Length: 428
Image (cartoon, rainbow, N blue to C red; front, side, top):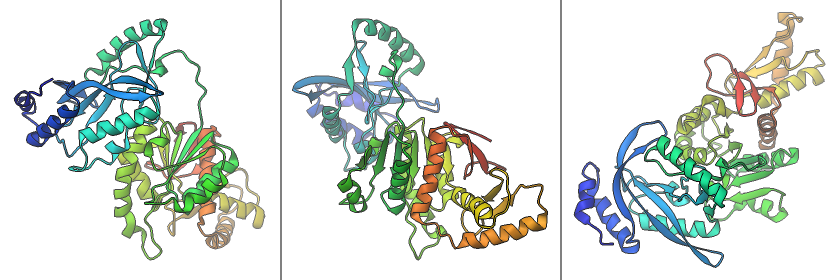
């Protein structure tokens, strides 16, 4: 099909970089001349709408010796080529979506090429080539049986009505299959803390699948021993999409150096999280984001802002470790009688943390003496990586297995910092 340059240029009348976009689409047409271009309304997640250029067609994917024409739709943002396209599968009525690392239930496509989009290095032709390569590893569509197909026709019509121009979506999740939930946990960062979290969670037997995202450049470095000794159910990957459908995503990445203060590293940590949080949030849209990166309170707030998740699904590790230690010191070392988890460390992690005592039977002076002695003992207990890893595993256990256990954590709250952690819901 001949590319109508002037027609496309008119469609792009309100685009900021119209000429650059037209030139790129001409190049796309050279490789994929069958794409059809139009202007339609795209509905964003926040319900805002915008008229955007989009094009549809098929890409050839070789899978197990057969070639499949995979229907796709690209939406070109008005800031293109400085922003990546939004990509969807566009299945017909006799096709279902195979939810996987690169495709969600709505048919939206997630690829490393999109995450790392940077003009002028990144171009749509390169994106399509990576899409073909990834789909050759994991075919994103499957054929429906005749009975499924009839149901899908009605479902597609309903979905098209409520999503308008977003996508004609179709998914296995709409059919009545019994799918056993998998406890998948992702740890972001392969430093000492990341590996400590992997080992602690693995030791507690919490996860059916554990993913360690190795963000280091070049060789695997610290993760090599995990490869050598082949821990069961542990996958090491540099691809963020490997985290897809995690119940908990744990952030351990940190640029804090031995000679730097928290304030010195906040900006570099925020820049790092800008690249990580939105993508990981997309891959695990129903999960909990657990932040162990320093400074915990600030990075938890940054994660919440970048993810757009509800506040109860973005948690910092807070003072959970110190609270557990304080209670142990008072009851097992100082031999004081307490009932339940009534001794806490609250406030900001670090020098500003304070003990809190709720035992009404003990005098205030006795509480103060015990607390001071316990805090002295607590100061000699450094925040070692393996200790924090055990604390993180404790929190993950409560979240995944609905332990209804009380923890001292960091969360967006006006007053309370001690919350009851339950399965994907926190009471506060």
